[in-house]
Image (cartoon, rainbow, N blue to C red; front, side, top):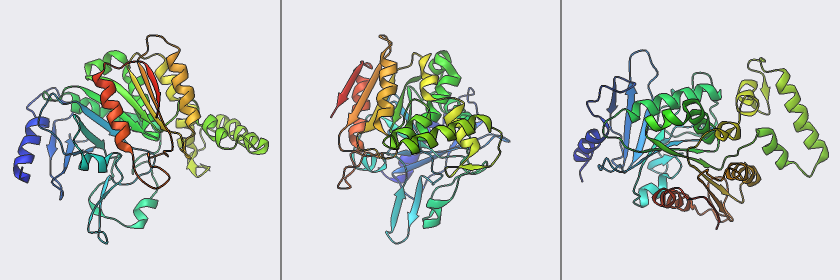
Length: 340
């Protein structure tokens, strides 16, 4: 299919004449790569959000997976001059380019970050701020809820699944909790997915990383005590991050807190070689959620894979996660734990 035809089909799918939209309109602007489609939300004073889909299908019955990335404020797509091609920080990018799935996976760009500039090493090191990518969890949750409302209000968008990787999972859980089961259903959100994340407080995750050292564990508890009494320390830095980041992700709320009172189905996936977030954190999240015999939870534990589902030889296996998630949806969200 040529590029103009593809754009016409995508506009038909996502840009309806609906008056129910949270935003006045969603516009498709195209990209330099015909496999990647950009959509932007526009409405006067409100922030504009960019969404990117890979090999979007025209069938409106195909579900949408809304993908929220991790903590880094890196554009989803950049042009790498040396490699003479587009490079991406978006989870599942390569497997979506190489294979066909019965879902439209759409990545959410963080606020005020713009893709398709030229890649430079400095881009990878650029820090998040209150105006670039945002810092506090609550602000990021606000943005995701705006995107959900805008997308779900389009007449031709059906079922939506929220998926977060690493920090993105915290944003997804925060949005789900803020909306609640009824509003999630009103927005056609059928399930949430947490990739390489965790459920209890971040302090627990950090303790897992130093559990063999009594002194380092003590330091983590000392940091926790300090944070709880210095919530209003502005832009002070702790462990390389602003206090307001640490507070909003570590102290104020956790995914486990947010998910306890919801009934929405939950998918969890974690690599057993994840050095960034210990899999024991998700073991605990799954164990707690599964205590409720009616809660629909799938927990996928992957041997030999790291934070991004890559093996020790550098080979990616992100397709295992996406295939498992799609099969779980098709099977009606069964309760199961799988180690493979």
